[in-house]
Length: 100
Image 1: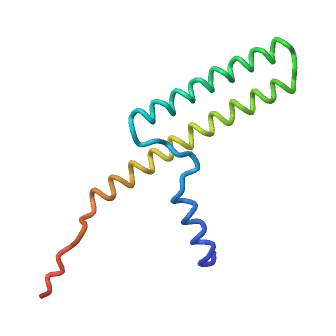
Image 2: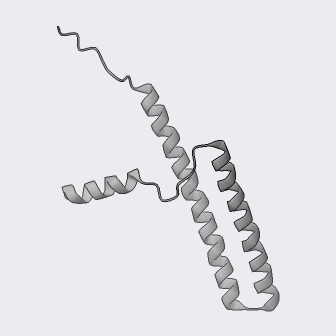
Image 3: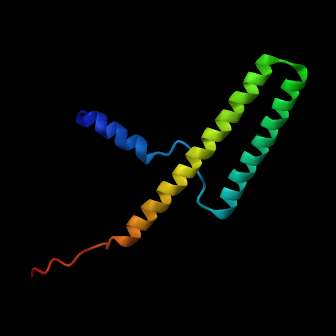
């Protein structure tokens, strides 16, 4: 891997794919929208199955897969943020050099 590729990979790691809010209210809103999306997907799946429409069923299944992946990415983002906060808290800001 060249230096430019490693820089690109590093910058992608710094930016999460799914931005999870830090505030309690923001996370509640994020969770609420995910719940509403899950209800919408369930309704779409039932309607597609009742009509026997394969294309609508595939669309609803893909929406369900997107919802699952979004939740997994959000969980990973929150875990990485928690680990970064623990690492920052564990490392001292400045070590005394002992030299004068």
